[in-house]
Image (tube, rainbow over all chains, first blue to last red; front, side, top):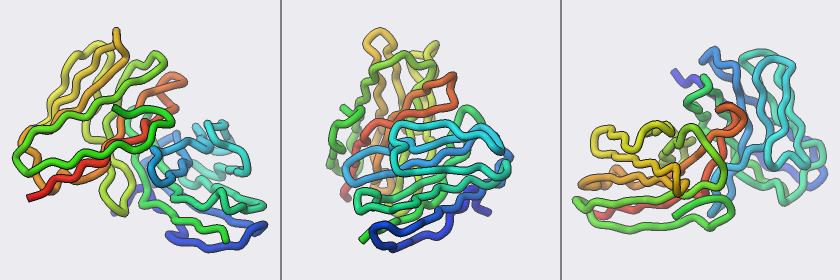
Length: 110
Length: 111
């Protein structure tokens, strides 16, 4: 059974739209992460969290908010989506050593 | 080699060949991770080497770490078609809880 799940798997929105990406982990890990992956590039860290209610800023946070409601759930919010945010988004959880990734959400902003 | 804003590197080899992928990093790290990403999936850890280790093996995989030159390598012996994937190196920041990924190497193994 998948330990990190993401929803939706695919999302299309328009410029200026609101989008929420969801992530749930059943690993009982304290750390959770949101990354974006663009063609030809590695994964870039948007936000991360070390527990419910905690939020840490990553390397490419502009245009993104995040919220960690429980140990299991981590959400990424795009309140005014722009075409530059078209990307593949991955959520991960970590035990402090290894990162366990979800299957990804492909977001297209028209 | 891969890091930072470099474009994705690509390697194409025949089945049975050996291959080495290189990674250099800019800041101190206590560990180098190597992840593999199959098409349509998230990355998965395949080998991890710590700063007090010079070499680590796992099956046909061999990772090396040179802290003086801040570089690491991942070698695959006798590559197989199922080794086709994108391989990322990654290093730790913030005491290990923030991981920074390189740009990746796309490996294609043909029969």
